[in-house]
Length: 206
Ligand SMILES: [Zn+2]
Image 1 (cartoon, protein in one colour):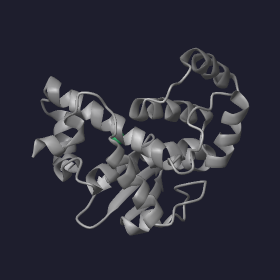
Image 2 (cartoon, helix red, strand yellow):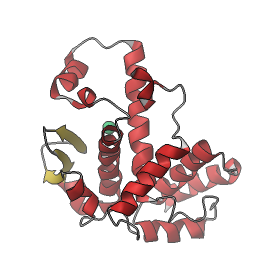
Image 3 (cartoon, helix red, strand yellow):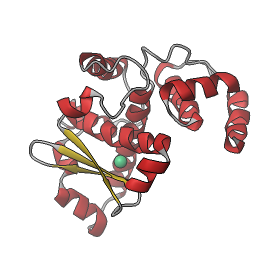
Image 4 (cartoon, helix red, strand yellow):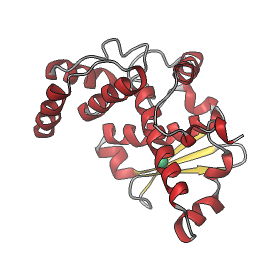
């Protein structure tokens, strides 16, 4: 049924039970200490995901097969920009999670579907759902890089704390700011946007 699929929702947010499912999965696979989603995290094995570096693609790409997944990632990004690589990797993992919990249909990831997207006619509605699906994959990726059970202070807006947290999670400071924004959307945590905005512009200079 279409209603099960979260990219049909008007607003892009995760329900509490969905967040819990993702957190439980991470705990089940022993990913309980930062930095999360490290190269040797069991989650890649358990979900049959192979990560391959390549110079053939610009950033990252996900391939679905009958019994496994392959995440292709640009080798220069992988080697020289580890935190950006982790952002891409977690995004592709976000897609896999959407499928794993049947929140998105498998067909959405088929090669034919990707061809249709590249060469076919796509309606405005489909385009919107596609964008929402992408947003969900990014959000889930950030959630897994900075899980609820380790992200003890969702209200952090002090620059020093953000830098400390970015080292702890091995993520770019910008991802922490967006993660705080996600938190606000999912849990309605109060965030001081004025401070946040000034921090966003400050962190660009770092
Ligand atoms: Zn994507």
